[in-house]
Image: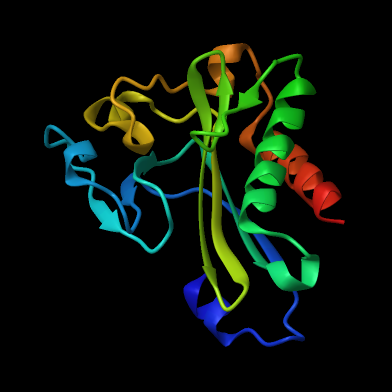
Length: 183
């Protein structure tokens, strides 16, 4: 992502990447170590260059990386964050789930539980990183950290909400919503 973004010029097309990571904790540039794992569970912690604190990524979690020229699209970071949140909210609404964002804590929530985390990096007017939507990921690794820097924050998955579609099906819906909003 970083290499792609650094090599961009005005003619480089934007890209959306949808993927899953092996188990890993990622800590943003401002991440405080007080939120890091409280016990050893064999999952590595990687410092990365996005905003935000620490989160967990692993199989069963959809990662959507948005590699966008914000200037060309006329987007600010704040408007992109809201766009990403709204895409996840609409995907969940398609399953009859009511979700919301929180201005003071980016991401998407169902009740008080976080179902999607967001983190971006902007370089030369172009962004990378993106969002992580919990589908059927193992939630146990979240118990070792303060997710997104919030002690006691509950984390939830689409599987906990009765959604039985596969990761691929949910991923298709997510990409469709993101592309629709980016038009």
